[in-house]
Length: 298
Ligand code: FES
Image 1: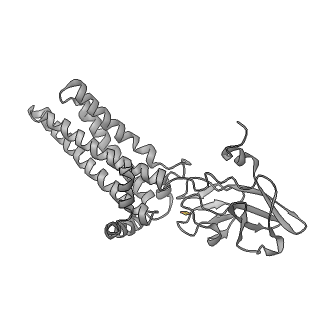
Image 2 (image 1 turned 180 degrees about the vertical axis):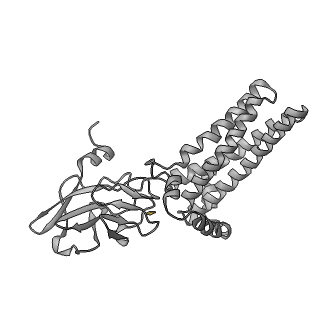
Image 3 (image 1 turned 30 degrees about the vertical axis):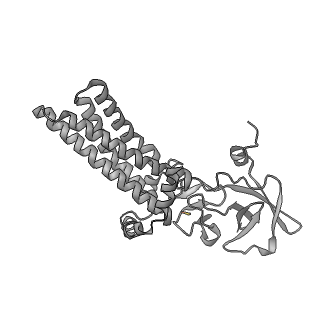
């Protein structure tokens, strides 16, 4: 409960924006959208990459401290584990920066704090590695390396708490359509005459919004809320069988909902369509309904 009060307070600290916004602009300049950014966000993986990469430094550093405690002296194994964690921290940080660059407001502030704590932890582990290396040569200061590693672990745990807050409380990296199943039965959403020849039409179906697009004689339907950060795809552009998100440029195949270009990692829900008496009807495609519907068979 107290920690929740702390995160509420942190989210409201707009002073952090003085650092966060220039940094965000810098990251956008260094890391514009494209294949490299998609590789870092995890578009190719179908899942954010950052949580996968951070397992290596966390595991290496934790193992090093366990060895310190178990053996009771500085060992080569512990030093090497800390070195592995330091090396693995770079791609982890880059993937985190790529995700963070598409956040704003309170998420951006928590992200800045998360990254700052991780930087402190990284410095402590770097000092631990250096101290152990010197101890290996001179035989002095071995226990200092262990203490520095424990301090690094304490700071990294705080950073990890904020990383969890970003995902589980603020929804960064979560498929924004995860709990949206859409209509299971045929549902009328618009008149065929309302659908423009170019671009799309946003309609309401049940509790969600859908994007309808005319492609030749076909009518295609996707969830209108971008799976990445929730932008309305109807404000984006339609071309070459894809819709491009207006916020961060993810492209989705109109027919399959698949991600054609990131930073999104998860595709859009797709719907079957038919026209009855001049009215467009939609229903959720069978396979995706079964995968996400908690009331489905299984
Ligand atoms: S909201 Fe980020 S790409 Fe759509």
